[in-house]
Image: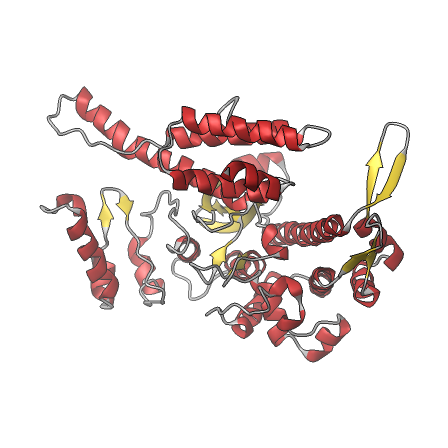
Length: 486
């Protein structure tokens, strides 16, 4: 039923309604009595499959869905809702048929592959999407004929390090736990505990995600999509190279100007998987290239610089392969003659947006910061359409009502991206400098404090959360921390 029609609309009664419907596993009640507020569906994640959305249920809702944008914090069930909507679209596309077409199946089987490579266990969600995707599903006379995925903001920082009780991307654990021994030996793969990028303080994070089942679904989807074995071989080479890069250790000479790799046999495995020589790989890790208009100069870096170079290569490798994988999936799912301009303009599509949710962790990555900013904009869109426009209509029609106050998050949006003194614009200006000195960082952070004062943030916790972001973003993180906290 519509909660708008209820007499008692307080927060306590609203919570009780959701609690009853969450705990009630009667399929008929859950199907026949949706929880919604006006035209907004309220979805509570039960953290288990209630078996209430099979084909026999979906048929009741044919031709009823127009647009759906799942939104919410991490763990609220956005990705699961996205998958259910995709299944619904595939089902409606094949009305009257006993099985899905090969095109519809390929569209559905894209999801398990992307989840393996782009989802991870966080403190709030064991299958958290750590990238955003826009999926366009193309139709011709109500029949699915293809799809296109646009991915963005893969959380690259997770590849080289995770917060406590969190994991790296699922695919690492799936391959190491369940891949056949011959393939593991071919690519020098061992156990999870043997790789620094997968361990946090020498402890393995717990997850309810089943790695053996995840690998089975990955390989099955890989086969359904018709992705070649060469791509899987490339996948194993990339995974092996990334993991062995993380195990490379360094030491410096007496004057600390030169850095050396202390375990060249590990670096040699990474170089072999990448198809480059050990000398070439060691050079780009332990040195830096300075280019001028007339010359190129290689100079040594210290141990900290070598670690940054190593991690940067690992992050770029994984991200490039992820982009390549999305491109390969799009090629398999592309509708006929998609590149033809006339065909492209005549297609009809439903677009589904799935972004990872808002989180506030002790240390937020740059990608998470951008997603949090995106969610702030989505919240403002919600406030504008639900509160502002509705009440403007009441006012225009002279309807008597009590004005509903709502929080305005515009100051937060301006603080992050407003011109000219928003955080992102200040960061761009600072990044354009040839060198970053303690004095320039001090001036930068002083300006931030002034901005905080202008936007009147009384809550010290908000300031601390924003400061933590700069610990991730700034190169001299320890210096920024000291200045901001003092």
